[in-house]
Amino acid sequence: MISLNIPQHLHTFLKAKVKHFIDNHAWNIPACLLLAYPDLHSLTANITIPLRDNVDRLCWKHSHHGDLTMKDSYSFHCTTGQQFNWSKIVWNIDIPPSKSMVVWRSLQNKLPTDECLALRGCHMPSMCSLCESDLESNQHLFLTCRYSQNIWNWLSSCLNFNCQFNDLKEAFVLCNSFWSPLCNLIVVDAIVNCVNFIWFARNQSRFNDKKIHWRSLINHIIAAVSLSGNNSCLKAKSNISVFVLLRKFKVKMNYGNAPKIKEVLWQPPILNWIKCNCDGASMGNPGSSACGGLFRDANSSFLGAFSYNIGISTSLNAELIGAMIAIETATSKGWSNFWLESDSMLVVLAFSSAKIVPWALRNRWDNCITLLSNMNFYVSHIYREGNHCADKLANLGLSLQGFKWWNHIPQGLQGDFVRNRLGMPYYRFS
Ligand SMILES: [Zn+2]
Image 1 (cartoon, rainbow, N blue to C red):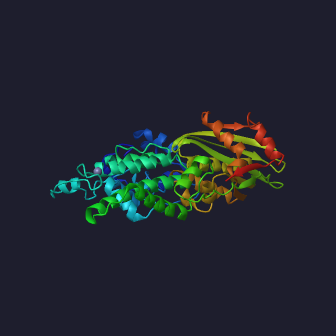
Image 2 (image 1 turned 45 degrees about the horizontal axis):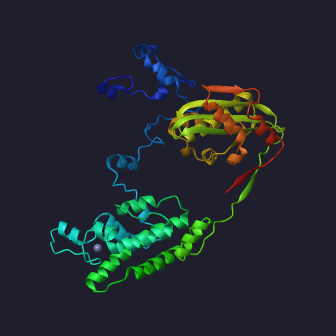
Image 3 (image 1 turned 135 degrees about the vertical axis):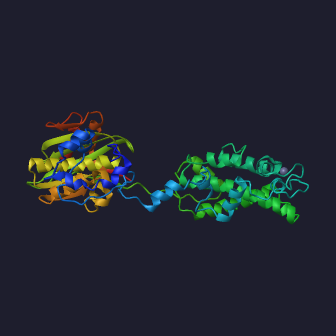
């Protein structure tokens, strides 16, 4: 009604359902309506009409399933909270939460340093309890104080990495990702413990009149990091720089498991059966998408293949459309014993649970399921390594316009095709 620019006050008078305009699986729109609304023809042309009689259903077009959920409306109304790039790094399952808490308070400027208390109206003479020569502020205490500088210099020498930060947040942003998981934990844990023990030394000096030398503080830090590191299940790569780092913090090497090697073999169908391998390809999600598939018989002979450029779509849509074209082609060719194979587990699952299929494809999907009820049908999953032929057809589709049917094996596919035919395996490393 909105697409046809029908005024709002007339909407309540429009009682007819979509099914009233469908007759014998084809659109049956009165000529007067088509005359009044010429756009109607182009709007209905791309809609798949169900083979079965279905009841009308309203769809929420912005969602995957077509339903408007409480979650959708909640996320629309509620603005997301503050996003910090360091927050996920500070809170770590292998670091005690009490220590993360101190760092979190320090990063938010919430620790009761003299500067912070003064900001809240609690004015008193200020002196750093560690160097006794400067005012105490968050910045001074944790970064620029002589005492803290000794700790950071020591950490720089351990990590072989400059730990002179202008802001503590920089420390957490820098220490992400370029180490192996166990080393990354050690680096984060070392920084967290440095902050914690500097705060501990400050409190000991201020409230218990106990001066802790920075060298003994380093021993505390090493002991704490060693405890977390040795209790973690994270793995480390075995190279010399990792080994040196782990030795410095007295953490045992936790080697990763050896890679598992799986043999992936393409199987031809049994006699009188036709097998189709299909696949989708997407340059982004959503992005420019295409699908492809090829049909083979029990002798592994080539019966035909297709590539289809879908345009801008999601990777799931591309995989599903590939499977649907395969089924429609098998029906039109009269292949009643049909085996479909995909490297997408979601496509295989969609045959048992239609909820996986987005609402926009649901009519066509239901029609395919109806077609399959007259056939002997089997669907299976194969690893990507065994589905190279279909993958290449889908990639060919990305550079095509619309649909293309191949009567001969396309160039670039012969190698994988012959390999499949001879029963030569592919290998999967995980
Ligand atoms: Zn100081």
